[in-house]
Length: 455
Image 1 (cartoon, rainbow, N blue to C red):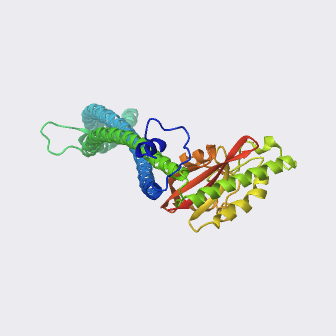
Image 2: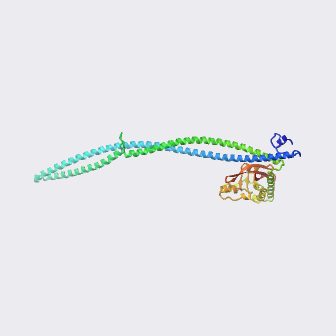
Image 3: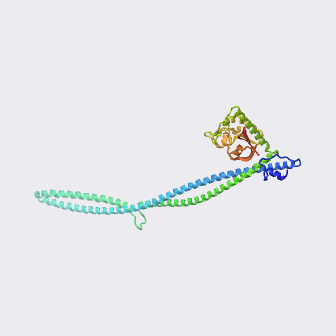
């Protein structure tokens, strides 16, 4: 076989067939071609491992970028809410300043009115003083009249009674006017003190206590308003920066998505090469695992056919896709109508595959949607409520619809060889290969066997 023919056969030429053809080698060509094929297999395996690592790192970066973008968006929303609150504070502060200005004006008006009351009281005090003087004079006149009435004897007795009454009345008026003067004096002092507190005078260095308190409150409100304005300006700057950061993160996410697509293609090339090498009939390090997966798939297919023939399960139940969620499970687990037959038939074959090599990580049968009814015993533990532990150790009754899982579940070629990075829990990852072979029940595709092994 020529070099060009070999190139076309393995899929690089335009004349490559849809399915690889058997290789017939001349004796003189065998050593070189076998060595070349093994070399291609080794290089493809190495390339696949690196591609899986790169894809895994890109996947991690994409998730981190997405979480970062969500965090920035959430933070931007919070900053927006803070800005709205600051706008409200500023509005209230300005309204408070306006209200205090009105209060100041109202108090000044009250102070003016109080000043007028003080003037009126002083007029009352002056009138009371005049009344006191009149009462003194009246008492003096009444006293003289009483003296004259006594001199007049019986003729002046009636006049004397009147004079005494006038004297007593004048004395009461004097006492009342003095009481008025005392009360007005006290009231004048109090109102004058209130007037001093409320009064504001041009050029006065020290205003009243009310105005000092009002100035303090006004100054505090002005400070709050100024701080809100400054904070709003800072938040506006932050919002602009976060908008820019969000845009950059979105562009980064798109770049990572594009890189992920390219890494998928790169990984696909390495997997295609591995399959071609395996199909050449040349023994490679992957051959035992591929053959084991194919044998296990055949065995499980025959067991399921026998179970249907014996009436242990109806064909419709075997292909049940009505996955019923199991309450309070995380990661989510599901039940189907074929879990009982899977628990009965699958473990013997799956556990036997683990004995093939210490490189085997797991061997499971999945339906065509990636549903694992029964896992290997070491991963078949009930959930404990610890997400990290459950993710790693309770892997049965779960649907694995990732790239590798679905490809293995839906593959109908004799075998499929893939390379991927698996999350082992606790931040630990392992790059491994997976050989998958389809499971048929009669002529109907049920799912596949997934046999994963380490490099």
